[in-house]
Length: 137
Image (cartoon, rainbow, N blue to C red; front, side):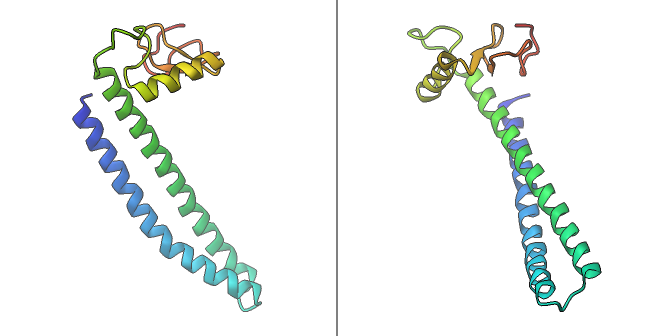
């Protein structure tokens, strides 16, 4: 997948997230109104519970959309970094961006992550396989 495709995917997912956020705003306002009425005793439980359920469903879809955007962003960043030239003063398994390189090597030194032997991605310390390339560690 090319970097252009990653950007297009990220844009599409971000647009879906924006639409979900806009949709949930109306649902949230309706839910807040229903909550106020319920607290005042003007709405019974049978009318309130469906509003609560609708809001929770929308809220969950927004959270799922946000997670999808984060994964697409991560993929785009990884793809961009994997296309960057390696620096001669750094080991081959360290990414080339100075600030990210420091963060990755610091994380690896702290023992929370390590570098994939095959593709150079950061992986959890106890991972038996790389999340990106699938190679055994």
